[in-house]
Image (cartoon, rainbow, N blue to C red; front, side, top):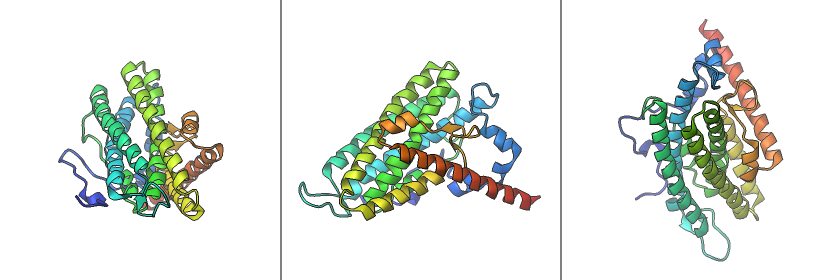
Length: 281
């Protein structure tokens, strides 16, 4: 089995429909009033809420598949570092591989739970499209970049999404959704904490490498704010889960920076979609 498997070689059957993340974010329809209303519709009181919840649940499902694939690749793609001495750029501590193996187990369980939740909510595999940016972030040749981009940025997004879905389950009096999301949320806090701890440990004597990793994390965070999908404004369906992010090892400064990043992504997306829509008139 070869190392560093590219996105194009992921195994998917005919049920899956791939879409580029750029097409999702910069779709000119995002600037329409109908799209803005749909974005705000992810509340229990809105008529469109069930459709929004099903779409988000399908996004969680495909995200869990890619998280499983990414953690598995990190177990395999790098040699184990010696028990003593420095860790080379193409090595990872064996204990990190054990943590990634544990994460694979968790993500596999999340895939199964998400399939069942999708059925519970009235959707099926392939009803909505899949973008593979999560796995792309897990393809970096530097394992520290993977920790920053996947475990801290994307698993951090999962904390926000699962908490939002858990609250949606409470609001809609759906104990199945509430329980399952709460269960998976606890796992995601662990995954982010593992990434935070390992990133700081591996780069303890390499501040430049840590800085590059955190820059990469900010890039992924901005991209996965989806132009305002995740943030603290009323227009954002998914809000930052501050308490759980703190448990996962994020500092207050890091959370505040993420709030600013999400607001910046929203402003840029609004300006771009507005300009694009105007050009189509």
